[in-house]
Image 1 (tube, rainbow, N blue to C red):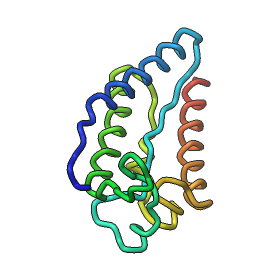
Image 2 (tube, one colour):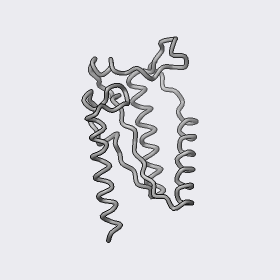
Image 3 (cartoon, one colour):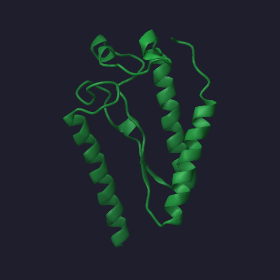
Image 4 (tube, one colour):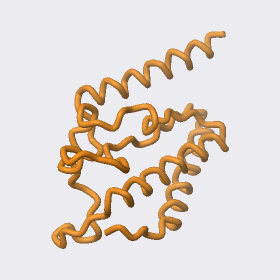
Length: 139
């Protein structure tokens, strides 16, 4: 299905949940770190990459109706953009994994689950973040 769904209600609920997490963390003096959600889904995918995707069905999976790659890319980008914008607005740290990780079968074994190599790339991002974070807190 290549028709864009109305995302506003879902995005509003997602933002509400993010803001609630931020509020609770501040209330309890917890340092938050958000990360965007990377995915193999991208506008121009090879057949090998397309064959790895199994999620994204419309309603009942038995119907075998799925969102198009184009629509999935737009939806994913909208949710990731919301995370980045909300974190920026509220002064919360966020690692943009969706922009930083390659969208290849070497990184993802399906649409959104990491291979061992992909997991190591996420770990590398976290190590960089925490080295920087703890380096700043020592000063």
